[in-house]
Amino acid sequence: MSATSTLRAPDIVPLSEEHLDGAALLLAERHRAHRLVEPGLDQRYEDPDLAREEVGALVRADGASGVAGLFDGQVAGFVVGTPRDASWGPNMWVEPAGHAAVGAEVVRDLYAAAAERWVADGLPLHYAMLPACDDALVDAWFRLGFGHQQVYAIRETPSAGERSAGPPGLIVRLARREDLDALARLDVALPAHQALSPVFSRRPLPTVEDARAEYEADFDDPRFTTFVVERDEVIGSAIACAIEMSSDHKSLALPPGAGFLGFASVLPEARGCGAGRVLGEAVLDWARETGREWVVTDWRMTNLLSSRAWPRLGFRPTFYRLHRAIA
Image (cartoon, rainbow, N blue to C red; front, side, top):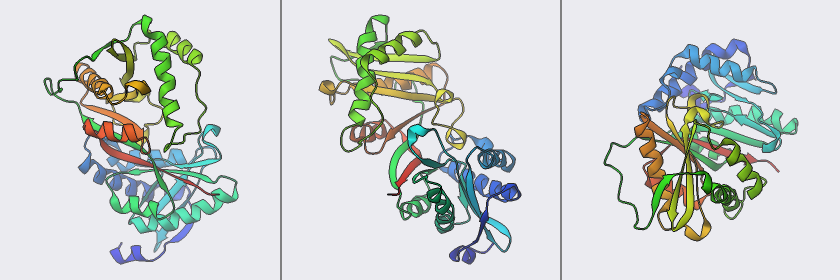
């Protein structure tokens, strides 16, 4: 396929099983290029057969809708959307395996065709997951009216001795049952912060009572490791676990076997003292001690604290989640 062919609009048809082989080749190539930048991502999806399974699962999902773009009968790109649960509103998601094309500009034509049906079906909230390293692709989605909502990021597990000396007066340790009240307050403090400007999250806030009950029920679950940081009293907490425990990191965006910094929160009155950093470093130490080569986390781009803290700790974006709300 010539480079000039990407300058004209493709012939657009509904995405179906007959297009999966071509779509898989495009997705596998996109992922191969992504892994040249971030080798911690899952190598398996460079295999077109496995890439085909991912695209096929999306095409066959309940409520799925998508299109393929053809140049001279060959698949030049595809976009497929699938809905998530109603907590996201009337939504369609372009998941990590939900799009690939011979050129970024082609994606704009494909989204335009796919979104026409989504909006007609009463689904005006659109989300798209795309490789953070592909500047042209990110720009193409921005020029479709999308904004930057979430960052998914990775870094290597540090070697022993790389950890910096923390601020004086801060003590990091494993959580104990007597910390449950503090853990519950911290569990509410993060979504309460996200509800403020400039994030403006509209998700319902949990109650301290519900958060405490959940912590108490799951406190002894060996799949999760909870750290707290003290400055005379507990002022912050973080949770480490395997990335496979995350419901949001999936498919091409899930580096198998990685550790996951799944939660970190500091009380409002204690922010700025370095507590978040020492909690993050505790999770990195945990990852090394449990034999994990990579550590993953994610944050809202509009969360000013997180979007500064985690890159300073060495996390590099792997995927961006973009969002468009059509009024």
